[in-house]
Amino acid sequence: MRRIGFQPVFSDRLKTYPTGIPGFLTMRLPKSRRRQHESGILAAQCALHVSSSHYGREAAVAGLSRLRLFYLLHLSKPASDRLIYREIRRLKSRKVVEIGLHTGERAVHIIEVLKEFHDVREIHYTGIDQFEARTAADGPGISLREAHCLLKATGARIQLVPGTASEALARIANGVSQVEVLVISGNTSPEQLLQAWFYLPRMIDARTQVFQETLTAGGGTAMRLLGAKEIEQLKAQGDRRAA
Picture 1 (cartoon, rainbow, N blue to C red):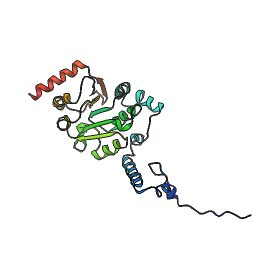
Picture 2 (picture 1 turned 60 degrees about the vertical axis):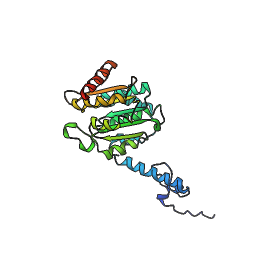
Picture 3 (picture 1 turned 45 degrees about the vertical axis):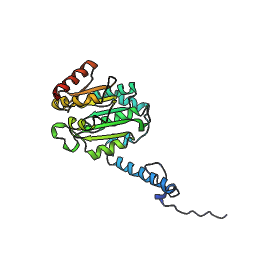
Picture 4 (picture 1 turned 135 degrees about the vertical axis):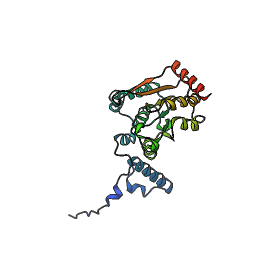
């Protein structure tokens, strides 16, 4: 009986790239499609820049399992952030502004929850942070480049604005409107927060949910959802401050 010869195949041609297309198939793609594939590889490499963080890898996974959703809503840390995840899930929000990103973990979790209801391209996230200008008093943080890689990997529409709350809001207040969820970090100083409320009324409306984080004894955090009356008082204080 004649034996059938076997020709070895180079392993790199069978390698599956981060985009999910085997390497040998990309060789047969049209140039335009090949460029799209290569762009996908670059985007994946950007996400791997922060692969040391567990949430960086999670962000690249499409969809949200029931187990993962249960974890975010009921078991994730810090526990204070669960209020945000539950409320945005209830309202199925699309447009989020966060003042103070910390490590970026909360931002990724917010986008994860919203992916349950929306095409990821319909989710708008704006993050304001001092990034490299952070001081030790501001707590742990993330660089602008790291934040860009981390959040772009989610697939959502991302806008990152460096600067203090008042500086950043002064630049974007007229261009970002109908915000559905506003999250304010507990590391935002009272002075910055007061100045921020001069600009925030241009971005929010009666439907906007405003979450205010506060720092507690022992390094913990607490989160509360501001009521309509309190928001109106803050708006009035911002107006008086500007005058």
